[in-house]
Image 1 (cartoon, rainbow, N blue to C red):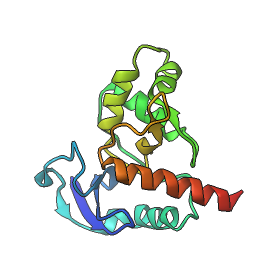
Image 2: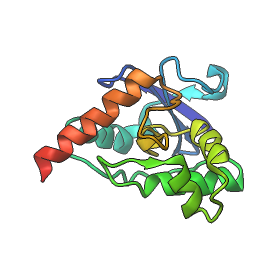
Image 3: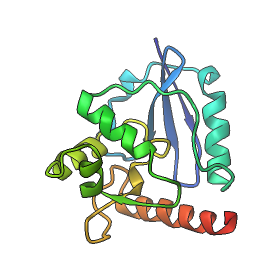
Length: 162
């Protein structure tokens, strides 16, 4: 059974989706590859208390690693990429090529990019931390300005925690 809620953030409204009470989606306004609203299930805040608390702490600069349980739906390759995304430390970035190397397939940087773009749980699975090989910002489902703001936020917050 799916449930959803909408919560505010400094980056616009976030739609949270749960599958049997476990977070399976976090979508931004205007996000590319956002599923149709009718797939989000019934409105219900109850499964999202912990997620909302952790998001609030993250946006306050107090949380650097999410621990909410996730139920990610994707191909075996996508799941491997999304697992690697969760390993990128707060305030740091990796390139698509670096992720491909970590997955044991150095020529898979484009496939990594495609999987990154299909990440269903933005922010918590930090696909915004992946950049181009030259250090440039490249595709982001939530838009490049939002990606830049998230990276700047993390870098700034990380400076205050050091």
